[in-house]
Length: 244
Image (cartoon, rainbow, N blue to C red; front, top):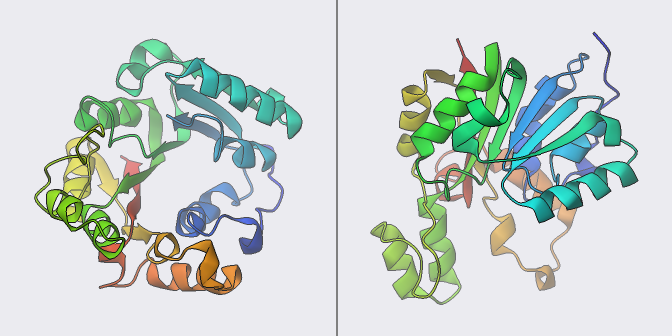
């Protein structure tokens, strides 16, 4: 199989998603080019960097505008030939991808919060993987949402998140997950979960005026991502799960 170039250095990665990239790095930098499926990957925040590493990425997204942006970004980055955009929904992958299954890696980031049925979408993604393939799952964390709304002066919204009552008045409801919720979804899809991590334990709580050194924040994020009790109050949750 074709080999991939070295992965981006830690300094090149967004602070907020440093923990996700750290979990993906052993897979995407292992030396072989992968077939990657990015469900809800939109404009290519993950797809384009993965394509620059030499992987072939198919992005399935319902937004034509997002896919147009993806195409421009991929062409600008010189990886247009390794990125394919397909308009469609994650809960209909068997129709959208037809017989194009057998992916080595699937990404499902910030998607299960907004789909009609997270269990159906995750089952569709599991079905698109080859045996031994893995899915990277990132979701909003309920505990992190409670803490974030409380410390920014919105106690009523924090209480609503605590009670799992959906979004604030005037805003569309968006699911938040506890770790056990995510693990139950993974088991229901017939996948084997790895260890879960926190995404943005502190990065979302620090505004740009804090003066904090981004490199120091990144190092702290990576140290806290897999450490309790800190990971429990992160903005998001992340895990890798494997298809048998």
